[in-house]
Image (cartoon, rainbow over all chains, first blue to last red; front, side, top):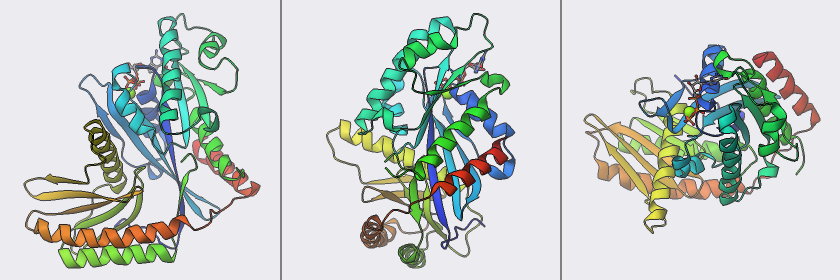
Length: 196
Length: 161
Ligand SMILES: Nc1nc2c(ncn2[C@@H]2O[C@H](COP(=O)(O)OP(=O)(O)OP(=O)(O)O)[C@@H](O)[C@H]2O)c(=O)[nH]1
Ligand SMILES: [Mg+2]
């Protein structure tokens, strides 16, 4: 029976995978779900259309155990990347603690990457959040594609000032997925020991 | 809001638990959850006779997502909120009601349980819990030192390779 230990203290963090449609957000979560030791994760929920496009969100809970007596739990979410789902995208950002921006390396998605980043900034502002204050990793996905654009060219449209930490990935082969998750988790937890 | 929400379970939460326990006893509902708006379970109680509950993490996330969507709809229609949500199935009922701005009370019960009774007791519980959660907001935030960061980092290296 699942009970909560009320003498325990918990840290709960919400991490959101953001980015343009089809960039590989859901693929990231699916890979984590399949490869992470089963005792660390709960069930994955996908609210998707019949053709597997995210409709509302994907959700995967991770229980990482204790850090100095604090039970540490991460909730991973993806947003729907398709432009017209903005209302749902905005809702998922509520209470976000860390973001993975999943960019697509395909040449014809360069503009979509840039627009999605602009959309992220706007949606955060509506929650009263400044994008600069949120731990964020830029994952450049689909590195395996033939004709994948150079990383620096993609960065130039998404993060022109070069402020974000970058990971490279081919999520459908699992490459770079855990590296990205680890990087964002560390940033979020480090935030806790930095007086603001 | 960007700070990871830190649920500190102390005396206040024992009181919250007690209220949920009383609600269970008075109404005959099966499961009773207090969920925060981000979709985390803050507290959970179930009747002694209840079978193993479904995955509570999932329930909490969907309830919070649903409430967020309903709230957005309310705003679009010029309402400040649609307060309660009732989903009635053949065998059971899911009842969700706001606890202030920060939480949601979620009750799952059999169709045979009178809804009116549940509503009356739920309202009482919500009033009580709203007060308690307010006091929780005044509790000073726990501060972590650098060694926390180091331990966290080591744990992540260990688990995620
Ligand atoms: N070649 C290649 N394909 C990938 C990679 N990652 C994901 N894909 C494919 O891209 C397609 C879309 O992936 P999803 O993960 O569903 O994309 P999404 O970002 O969740 O899309 P939305 O839900 O619409 O926002 C799928 O067919 C994946 O198999 C990658 O690294 N390389
Ligand atoms: Mg998706």
